[in-house]
Image 1: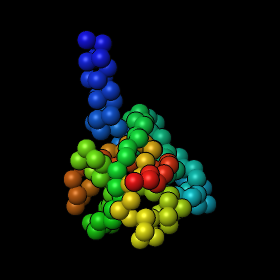
Image 2 (image 1 turned 180 degrees about the horizontal axis):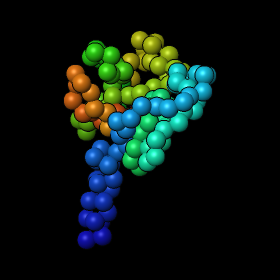
Image 3 (image 1 turned 90 degrees about the vertical axis):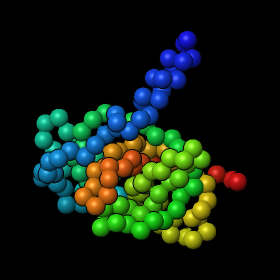
Image 4 (image 1 turned 90 degrees about the horizontal axis):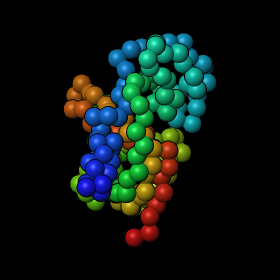
Length: 147
């Protein structure tokens, strides 16, 4: 019974319904610099939201850690709403990836596409105008796995 409850609880924690979401508010005053993600290092956000310097937006909700293993591929970025980088897991899950400039440059090498990676970061639920709500991982670490 204990293992069953642990399984149910861990499944709930990894479900994207509990992930951080982009807040439907505008970012306030920002610093005039660019961080490794290509956004301001600091901006003000309204009450009950926080600024995420990796995406340059105000977000709400508790962060949910992500650790996934899968193959990264490039897909057509629809209407500029998607990054174009996608992780396909062995379990059949699909995550859009938000990458730092350094990680994006690493994937520009055609040899690295189609390779298996261990990804860690934070799950973000993104709503789009042209695309449906999709699970996204803000990638903090991108480690190639020997096949």
